[in-house]
Length: 165
Image 1 (cartoon, rainbow, N blue to C red):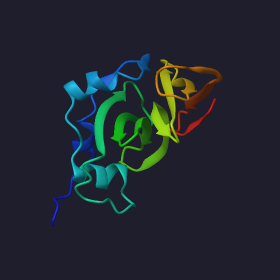
Image 2: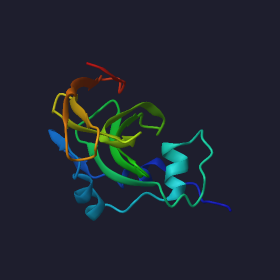
Image 3: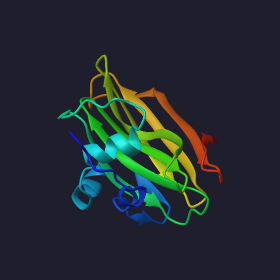
Image 4: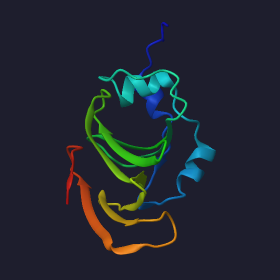
């Protein structure tokens, strides 16, 4: 199959710019999924996984563009929602103006592993600081175990690198 080469600005056009602060929670993807079309296989393989072999027609994985962080000068910051079986992630990724990936981090989502449901939410403020709250429950939705609750902090440096804050 011969796919036409896409340009980085085509990929960027899928991510509407949003001013910060933004909160990403368990149901936020519904808003983005209504307003933004899922990314094509060509865009996924060219811009999200350029060095990996992607299995074509993986009907269990979808990437939905959410937004770009507004007012970044030295880098471009994008957030997408990745949905696959028992794993839903908000991924923050930074790029340079040529479309080369600088840094990438999962900042929120829901995962199920060995019967344990782990959920995390994130707030990105206007200083590009990300506060992530996460916790687990052993039975899905019924009982939340407060001993699993923790907060992490990340930040985006002016270089576009995402680091622990």
